[in-house]
Image (cartoon, rainbow, N blue to C red; front, side):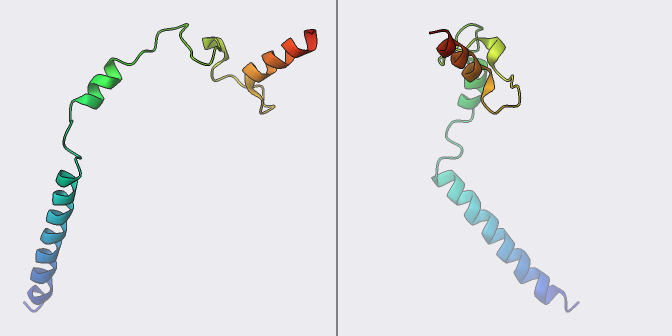
Length: 82
């Protein structure tokens, strides 16, 4: 029974802490746009052949272990030909 003298104030403190965190999240705009991120994922432009760096899709994610990557290796080969 004496444990209630500890548990009741702790539970009240926990409720106020959760309420303060929720209030902060509402005031900081965490719940302003709930649908926008989902639409941005669906409308993402992932068409093949459209890479702003100029590398082809076959060069992405491949590495020979040298730390340069395939694009740097290809650019190095172009320099040797000149």
